[in-house]
Image 1 (tube, rainbow, N blue to C red):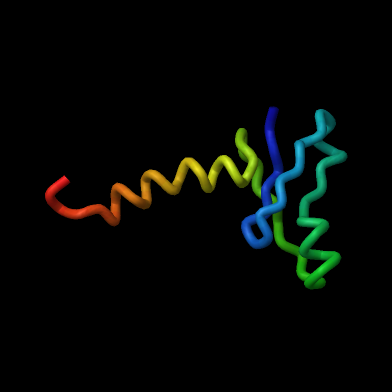
Image 2: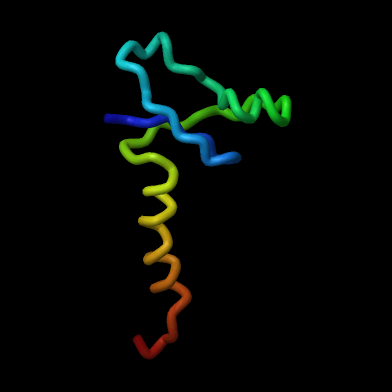
Length: 66
């Protein structure tokens, strides 16, 4: 299953099977801020992408003795 994610508000939508039905811009950002932010495709929803990046950021910020 693939997802369409918004980099600004972190909304995740399941990508429809028919690609012509997929929105190009985030509906939440359009509705709330009146800004058209393009969605990016991903195999994971935003919350899992952020969770996967958190351990990497910890390792990068860790002490040089690790």
